[in-house]
Picture 1: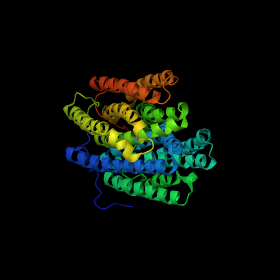
Picture 2: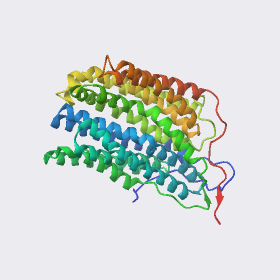
Picture 3: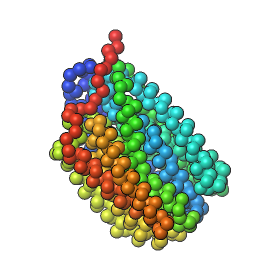
Picture 4: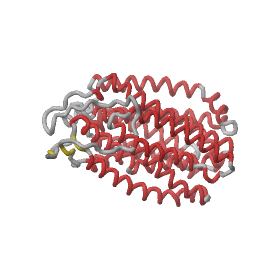
Length: 437
């Protein structure tokens, strides 16, 4: 299914050897347009998820809001174990194939098979975890679909962006976000409270069907060498970079009282949509800069400029939300709002640091330095988890926030240090393409 007006990188069909000529996907104008479509789509998904949780909080109360938010965080965390990493690998290697006109069908098939195996396992694991939190059989069973559905969404979104189809992704984000919220309204109107995870799971699944990455034939076959190792390092990088945010919500579910979890979930649902902006931009950076010579260094003026402009823009955005927290929280969540204001401001500090760290991480990933990203980010994750465990006995509600802020600062500093030092020269691209006669 195609979307009219869809654009992508102009392939430079050069064969197996020789330099990659500049492609349209790496120009500043095309990068900005792709980032706008991707960001617009992810913002639409964020707004839809906010509306989703607001409806649940108003209709079902704090306890159910806390349970649903924790399960949605579990779905995102589970996707980091493989589906998101497989999508990032697809994005990067598909971008190489587009640039050189390679046949990428074998690579896409390989990553799709590993994705399928992972979501089966992750979905099965989600059921007992959700049951332990909720003691609701229907909610626990549908948690498996939420985990598998988000895993499909994560893989499809990043994989399709590798082919330069940001417009398709943006439109699908908007459409499926609306579908999810409309479906929830129907579920609540019917009084089928146990099925509140079904509409959002369906939305993620429909998105994956519309945007599933498919292989394209070419005169030479893109080699599969390094694909799974890149994805494996990306698992560590993803868990270390994005996992701590989800662990903050999960820690509230584990350590705090049910009523307090609803308060934390209310703040969490306001804070997290803003973090999606960084994820959207980073998903564009990986394929766009995969063609570039260099090592992902922040010493490059273009990369440094993107990072500084993004950091300044996010500072304005997050600062405005923090300043308006006293108005925003009671407006969206009358029951939990006042108590959630300080929680929201603490989360926003961590989300700001986490969000801007995604940009230097994406530059390094585009250059094939996923191992260094993993090690740098893992340092922050370990520190953050230790802080959560130490703070939980005295502050069960805010321990996750404290650990998230501290860990995110450590990760940002480590990633900037890695980005400023020299790495492997030249584009880290697949070698040894096989000629198809």
